[in-house]
Length: 253
Image (cartoon, rainbow, N blue to C red; front, side, top):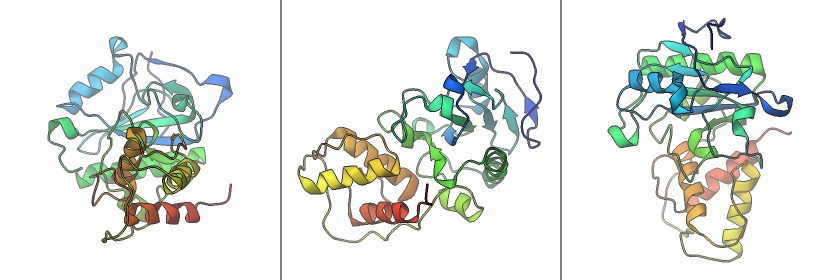
């Protein structure tokens, strides 16, 4: 790709990526998908994201120092979500704008996100959501749309801070306390009801009544985003109540 004009006035540098195509069926972006880079260095990750051999790309990268790169124009389909789904749709790439946040991730020590970086992420998210009319509940984690494969941006990402800045959908997590819970191996109507609630929120989950590995992965992804104090894949009262409160707080569609 040749150089292009940035979509956001917040962009510090345009670095065109090789991998992209047209959004399918004329779809417009309605999801803002947040990732971490998950490599030992963000510079190495940027090289991979622009390389034709990698078969991946994204729209934006936010560096640790707050510098913002744009790699793919927003009108084009970047290749960042992979095998994923949300609200029953599987071509998340055609429906989304992808932001990679420089952080080595769980496999490389998973440091905290610097304040200056988060401020830049917030500013970019606000700009994109305003221009593209992206709804708060459609600002998602990569792990939300691909819970079987992905952990990012992870439990250290400050979603509550984004919420205070007007970005994303959030409810203060219900405090963790002793009580009944659902976990791997359990079956029956309570599990089916839990799965139905996750499906209503948008997660790709089979409503089977069996608390299988896929259900535990969805619960884990939900906890990373919405109840990060304990990420264990067990649907305790705190997890289930937080989910119900989020559903109740969804705007009318």
